[in-house]
Image (cartoon, rainbow, N blue to C red):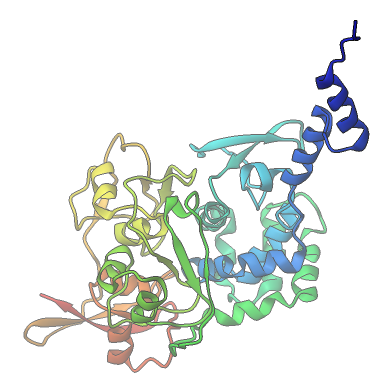
Length: 386
């Protein structure tokens, strides 16, 4: 009688001995190693997020160098636990007003509550909003956007961090990596460039689930249409620009339609300065009509500064609204009326163009402006439809 041989076991043993078959433990280790992402270096972090910092500088006047230096320091180049798990790049804690997602980590105390976002883009927006909407940081906005040393010292004085060397550490990072060169980009590069570099800034889970692109120099809507095969008419519907406009450098451009509500992890927005329902909707990638309905406002109504706009859930009560206030100087020119507007803190040509239903180029042309820079207290002549 022949001895029975279990060929299955023999083959398994042979494979194990030759290393051709992994044990379950080996498979887990291999998968874990594959999933582990390489850490970003400081230079890689700067290259990846500089456009967001510059874009937010144009919106809120916070120096791009300060935003980048804080992101580098607070998130460890985007490699910290908070940055990886909560997309929180600025160490902002929950505080009483926060209505979004939360993540817990030890900082000054054990298991403190920090804000959690759906994307790094949301973290950058909320960082700007946090500084703009907190009274203790008000004095910083009297400083020039190129005065990064004053901003760094002001952040420490206002209590952004408990580290007594916080200001010097920010200044050191800015100097080492020459970040203040981005502050000089407060003046847009206004000449469209056919060879402009471009990048897809978002994937389907970021920017409110909208495919997004950003350019490092000025472009035309036609250039965007050709590069991404998106009809220029649709581009103007998705974004706050007209077909004849120049899209300024570091402007976030949506290539897909906005959503009905925010999925960024930010549930509400406190209105700042000259912000409108249109500019808020653009910032978060939300349909303007949906934003009006969610906040029980009739289209055309604008909230007052300091009011809270619901981005996700329906507002319990509608925000206070205001009639548009301009200076007393008016000039009737037939089909349109010319007003003299006095620039307020936080105004940009872009926000004014949306408010008065005109274009950046039209305001510049009417006032002989050499660039997009305007200053608080400056008088502008603007043509508005009757």
